Image (cartoon, rainbow, N blue to C red; front, side):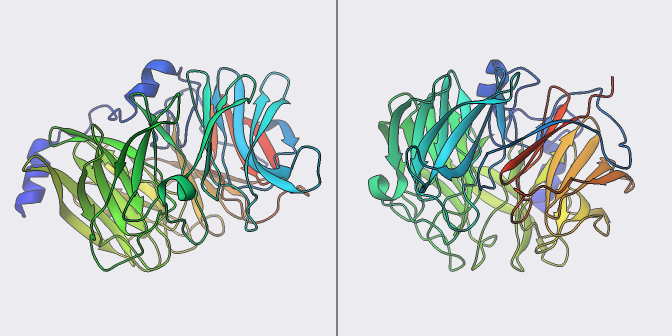
Length: 437
């Protein structure tokens, strides 16, 4: 047994409560709120209970649906009775399209406002899930246009551009990041060597710090990836961990010092899934015949570094997009390039507990709630799978209804808030009742 694994087993007490990597949101949001990408703690975990433990053949009750969101892969965020997302829509006063942040009133399902962010994207629209906090909304367009808007009115308070203002390197399918708010800062990833990550004053947009990156290895490109930043407290240092197209990096939260880089997880094309963490351990994965890894953040001099606990090759586990969740000791997600084979991995060892044929087509976006995994396949099959490391148990499946506005693949992640499941496909948003009480 390696020293790293032995340290992991001795140092971690598995089975404790899920670690709180988004403490800023825990104090500000209620259980029903979903104020940012992947939920209150940016981990794809919904804390609600009393949800349906199986579905009828045609799915849970469809409560309502709305159209008019425009083209886009952005999922939704929810706070204080309002729903936020992004879409490519006709610009005000003209037939030309513009990339917009949009707000809806959940009680009336009427659009409250829309704010123009930047030019549209010719390949599927925006990808960012708006971040909402303390009356402000933050959204990032695919060309690097970053706005802060009033959550009630949509009035733009300040704006930046990641390429123009910071020399960012936009990847081939353009910016897809969902922004992080932490300790008064707005964090984003322009990409490249000179400004791989920046921290802005979240109220004014003024630059707090800019992180320059060294060369961390031969794999991948020096540009932003398609992932989003998470917070890790490890080795006595609060740090921001992000997956770029050059690999996984750690940046000191206090001053933007570059702490460490892990190049082995990068590939030649695209680095997409948001990492998950437990204490000082970070699990990451990319596709394109790459694989997955567990890293441990360790103290090094005045900062931190990482050591590799294990690496899983692409035949064992690679997550293209759709992500994965950590529930206790185990990682659950979809395996395969352009696929989503349900898989359970013991986090501390990398042992595959089970891996099964997928019940839907293409990649799968994954959400956890109340003992179950919600797999949303890109061909609009929804699957409910028991989160049980000892066995694979597919509880239910159903097909989303076909609508004229559902163009392109169904990649937007599902969201559960207040007993309702929200699923977006391009111009259409569906709301299902999954409250089992």
